[in-house]
Amino acid sequence: MLTLAIDGKNYLLDLVERLGRAGIFLLMGLWRIVTPPYKLQPLIKQIYFIGSRSLLVIVVAGVFVGMVVALQFYDTLVRFGSVSLLGAAVGLSLMRELGPVITGLVIIGRAGSAICAEIGIMRNESQIDALECMAIDPYRYLIAPRLLAALISVPLLTAVFITVGIGGGYFVGVILFEVSPGSYFIGMYDAVLWQDIVMGATKSLVFGLIMIWVATAKGFFLHLDKSGVHGSEGVSKVTTDTVVLSSITMLFADYIVSSLIL
Image (cartoon, rainbow, N blue to C red; front, side, top):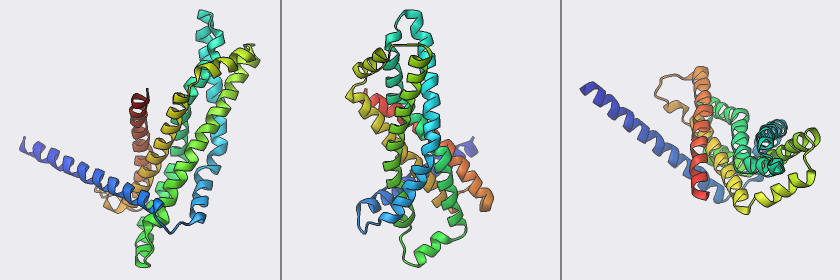
């Protein structure tokens, strides 16, 4: 019984230590964003990596998600004679929920894991220590550009996802099932409110911050991992942990943002 109590206490202390370290890490990264000197080239490089190189997969995912959403809603609405609401259903589901969430999950898998592995390898090979020895701030050089690039890229990619998703829904609803194009777009126009756009934009910002925060922190603090696994195996472990933890945290944040804005 005493052993269990001691283990529980140690686990709790370790959890508090990790949360505190991650919180300070985030504040340090955000502080470097708003304080000079400002360098544009690292930011553009990260926007290209996180945003531009994710564009194709976002477009493909958005088209097929929009098609599936329209197909499912059409099957439901036609039973109640409310096919004219198809555009509203597709627009609201993509704008409020599916657009930000699926975009976030796609970027976690494509960019978040790569960023964690990159920074973890730099930590393994003492490159971050070398930066500090050369008086180069690793937070400004490594963390701040990635955080700011995510805050810029993820909302834009979410907007692209929603747009092409609406197009995919239009193809299924109007082209395949011959729903009136006017009712599709007018229903969407009447149903989607400014509050829904704010919810989608807020979620995309929060998700972008969470995924890059977790990815960079996991790689940056690889050497403090108490599992005792380091080297290439350690990089693999923290990369897997990044995808799992950021996905779960993002879904939890999804509920919190939805409950606050509704």
